[in-house]
Figure (cartoon, rainbow over the protein chains, first blue to last red):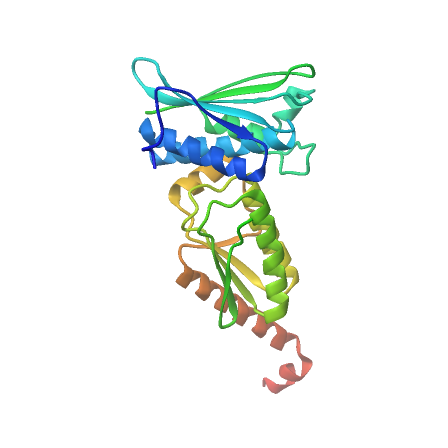
Amino acid sequence: MTAGIDLGHPQAQAIRSDEDVVRVRQLVRAVAVAVKLSLVDQTKVVTAASELARNTLVYGGGGTVEVTTVDNGRRRGVQIVFVDSGPGIADLDLAFTDGYTTGGGLGLGLSGARRLVDEFQIETSAETGTRITVTKWSR
Amino acid sequence: MERVPILKIGDILLVSIQLDMSDQTAVALQEDLAERIVATGCHGVIIDITALDIVDSFVGRMLSTIASISKVLDAETVVVGMRPAVAITLVELGLSLNGIRTALNVERGMELIAAARADELDYQLDDDPDAETATP
């Protein structure tokens, strides 16, 4: 399954449909396996990616994802960047509140995804859309 | 779009999810199951998620919704085969799977449904005034 993954380069995937969300999960899984994340950590990062990819599709109107391996000298990890040019998130504090949703979901996507990864950065504005970067390190 | 097959075994509908479901496939499963419960009159639904390597909030919500729908249609739902890593992740994600019964495997799921059904039948008998007078 990891045979086709070139770890030297970022892997990009468009997010325009339901099926693309499935592809994002598979891509993140392959990279997480390649950098030797534990099974639990693989599961966490794939779940976080699934939530964020769905957000990109539903709230951002679609976008792209880029999956890269990272290395800080001691540990390897997987870094995932989600980019959309949607309307941005007006109130970040509110968006990170468990149970808050504007889309009819459970309101766990953003807050839950943040709990499942080691690093989480978000830049959002009404002009440029939303860019979320998450990293999960091997232990 | 792919569809998840639903098998009927006696009084139970068995769904074994073997593919990485798109959100549309998950919603279709919800609707297909509701129709099959009514069409077959089955009183139990077992959803086997052994093959699922993640359960995110969308699939979690689908499982809760299926449990609620089948309850309204007089059927008990049991989710079986959750992987340990999936359980750990679900809890951290903040998903509580309210109202969902779980069992470790299909066999125990069937026992759970049989027991729940027996309890319910007992309860209905207790409610029956004729049954009441029959006991000394």
